[in-house]
Length: 112
Ligand code: 5GP
Ligand code: ZN
Image (cartoon, rainbow, N blue to C red; front, side, top):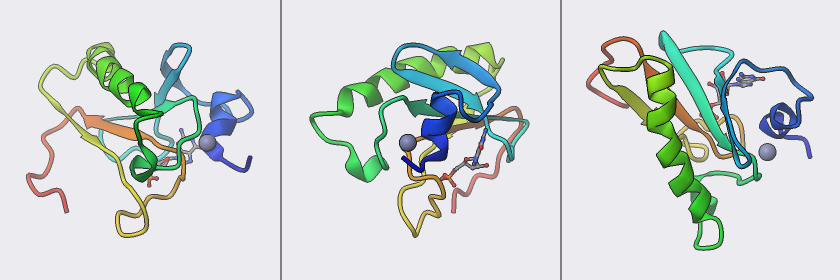
């Protein structure tokens, strides 16, 4: 499959990993938009938030259990932002579900 994040998961494209378990991978964004910018993905290919359903939602719950652990690993003691861009209007560029963790600075209070 022609999916960059599946290739990262399979080790075909290198990444700076910050967390990995059987079902989840987190790595540094190659083009960071904050001092700390991590991407958290399920290893299973899910296209976007719009494709989450009762068959695959357990992994999303697990991702949100792992996010606080990643935030601790990255010293995000003063807060962080979690974003998932979904579809064209949100400018989703990689069609593999991912959650951005952004932090390490005071961010703008407007999100869009
Ligand atoms: P999106 O725009 O889909 O919400 O976010 C995709 C993110 O993936 C972008 O922030 C982009 O910088 C990041 N990205 C794209 N290709 C790669 C890559 O090959 N390696 C890493 N580490 N990040 C990537
Ligand atoms: Zn994929």
